[in-house]
Length: 151
Image (tube, helix red, strand yellow):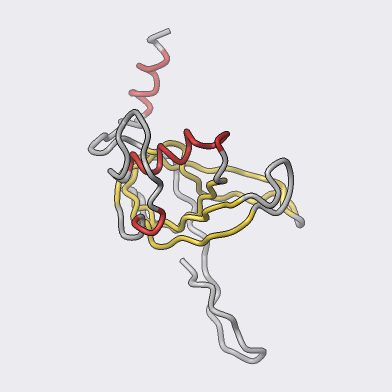
């Protein structure tokens, strides 16, 4: 994961390979937090937390950045993050302690998302689901088929 260090014009750099994780359950560690502002759209100029995570699965590890707009429309998403970190009750009110997130760990379901960039499609890793503390979800094809049979 990069640390956002500015380069000089003639610095020597090393290219990074983007690791795309296959859909799986992994363990995350929160590595940092940026306080930002939403730049465009319906929520422009509202506060946003950019959470930097390291996610490890059986396949490998990768850095992921997740954005949380501080708006009541996204309270559910913010709650899932804090609950997965053991910093919020399963139900009810809690105070968002963003500074206390760094170093917290938990489990999540990771997947991929593709979006249209300036130079064509870009695929990135993303958190598909934040799991409850201690919850391990079976993502094998057999488990997915059994889940579909429930309907």
